[in-house]
Structure formats: structure tokens, C-alpha cells
Length: 368
Image: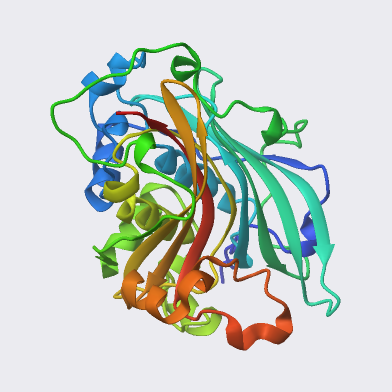
């Protein structure tokens, strides 16, 4: 009788994490035109910067850069293999930045450093805080962020030995640029005959945008995109695993996709003149999404800051499911934009069960 084969498991349980450890994630992917086309086919993004070579070159880029949210999804997903494949939930996005531009043909990889490990008082789980950098083969950092994940207690004995050792640390996100090199140079404002509204001049603090068009998540669509960006958590594509391990008892849509869909549902109203994403912060997924759910977005302007040829606009961006953002706002009013996960535990009944995403977004927006 032959020996049983090894059944490897990936990710880590709480006792496998050590503060200060750095993981060189094994995925290394060349982002070709097919990857970009598949991503664009699912996300209705209005900014010409990431779709038009002519527009991007007018601002000093080599060609249209990789969309920041594609870079974020690659960085998040690459880290799953080492960080969160055994996670219960993703808890927070912290200080997401896109310091330099990536381009079609770049080969990207990622590394993460463990910043903190905090067991819960119950002892059955804990919170792991990591910093992740996505870099290209030229050494440029395309995306840098921190995140927190809820991890089960224990140790993963069946994890195979890694071919790499802990290798230093990762640079602090707060030390990194928020604009890529071409936009850090002076540039002449470009004009176009057509395009969308939503220039810097149009925004003022307190404005609320209830974006009208929704997005129904396709059954196979979300699994294909999850594989495209190399997210290996079975919660998103293994139905048998989910029957025992998913709160929904079925596959749950990967949160990075929900993030990107909500952001791009807002883009025709507020993103058609965005030159770059300066950053995202204080983000979370208060509730899950499954195939068949329909997403809607809403944005509230929190701050505006003039920079001469362009300016910063800071929004609180939220996503809801299975009802329009107008209906959600009519019921909840300004509470729609209140941070759900910071509400005291005793106020659980005040949490909005239809809200699936929330984040603070700061964009670099051109003027008229």
C-alpha cells in the first residue's frame, strides 16, 4: 500500500506569525494586455488616464499606466498565500498609496512584513497587522498598503517549508510618495473635446453623490477575476469548502473586487477627470457579498485642496447591496457615511446591514 500523499495548506494561523517577519510572496506575474483587458471588461472606470495612451502621454507618462486598483488587487491577492489564506475575515485597509506608475509588460511581485499580532481575549482568534509592497521588475513600488486580518488561533503544521527566508523589512508607507514621478513635475493642463464632468472646480465640501447605476456580480465573473489576480483563498471559489467554512454557506466575493466595483461605479460622476489616486484609508467591508448581489455606490465630499493646475478631493466612498444608494440614503441619511466598524458593540442594531464597503478616498483631479 502506497504512503499517503502530503496535503499542504497555505496561509498561517495566529501562532505562525511573528512580529517583524517578512514574507517574499511566491507569485510573480507579467501584467500583459490580456490581464488589463479582463480587468477593464468588469470595471466601468471613467478616467482616461488608465484607458488612453494619448491622454497619459500628454501628462508625461510612457503610455497609459496600470490602474491603481488593479495594482492593489494584485498586491492583496499575492499576499493571501502567506498571510490570509486561513483568515476568518479581512478587517481593514490602511494608508493605501500608489507611489509610482506601472505599465503593461511590467512583471510584478510582492512582499509583506508583520507589524503586529494581537490575540483576542477569547483566545480562539486574533488580529494580524501587515504591510505589503507590490513592486515591478525595475524596483518601482506600484502599490503600498497596510491591512488587518482576523486569524484563527493555532499553528499550521501542514504548511510546506518555504524556499526563502525572512528578508529584512518593508519601507514605511507613510514615507512614500502619493503622486508618481510624471505628476510630480509641472505639467500644462490638457483639454479634450469630450469626456466626463467632475472637475476639481465642481467639488465642494458636503456634496453627496448617489451614483445611479448598479452592478450585479456574476457567478463565474468573480471567480475568474479572483484567479486572474492570484487570490488563493478557497472561500472565493471552492463551494465544498464554503459549505463548512463560509458564513454564507457558499462562495463569498473577494473584497478587493467589491472595492474596485464600488469605486468604479462612482467614477462617471466623480472620477472622469481623476489624474491619480492619492490614496485610500480607513477602509473596511462591514458585510459580505455573494454572486447575484447588486452593488451601488455613494460618495460624500469631505475636503478639497487646491494645487494650482489640479487639486485634491477627499471623499467618503460607500457601497451598498441589493438596494440603490438613493434608497439607502433616504433611510439612513448622513449615517450612511459613518464608519460602521468603529461603532460600539452595544450599538450593533445601528449598524447598516446593507453596507458592504466603506473607505476614505483622496483623488488628484484636474481643473477645467
